[in-house]
Image (cartoon, rainbow, N blue to C red; front, side, top):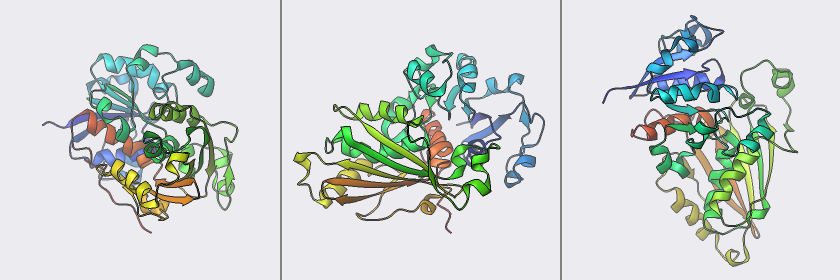
Length: 348
């Protein structure tokens, strides 16, 4: 089988360079293009010395047409870019994976409310498949356009899924207390993410409403016949990578009698065949550093009376973004799902 020719739009950000790191060592991929208007002609390794000797491409102008010669194109761009460029690529037979929000929400009114941006390609949106690999694998297999999930939504959905799918908890009282490293804010000059502002401190943000809330609600609603209500509060932590979500759900009366072992088995049986979901022993405390640089998501169960507590960790740039995008590409092209993604977390 010939290698998949891959292009990346927006290779100058954190998720872009993470895609480059993963794809450069992917056994079935040939990197053909990394586009950036502002850096056109500049060697990628000049901007990212970590890729010296690994990626020998130069940034190219997306208007050059080079992306149309690719088999797959990743968009690691601000919202609005993928919707503007994806239709032309789809018409050329190129498969598209968007790491932004343009193709995550099927309701254009909800998208426009939260992102303050008109959705310009509703026809393309109709054919988009939501790319949470573990829960939507069969649809991803035949997809031409995938909207990669957000980082927070990945932890919330995988953590709540076994409970909602098996009708064990009340869906109208879900709570997600989530923390992310500063890289989740992207690679841009902004006061709030400067070292002296984000280091040695801890704060909540988006308490009255976060863009990942409607995305998560849209997907959680598919897991249960109950009405879903979610309280989601994100926090910024003084670390570069890593995400920790503490999820709370109240057991329904008929499930209160379940033992801890029975609840544990529900999660283990749900994810037993998933290579990138690790259900740890009951009462464990997964650490973000155990998944740093890897595509692994780890979770552990606790209980306080009739409340189930699920602790979930992932690297926000890998399983929360670039790694999951590569996982989706593997599924779309019929490759081994783990191809290029078997790196172990970096400790210390």
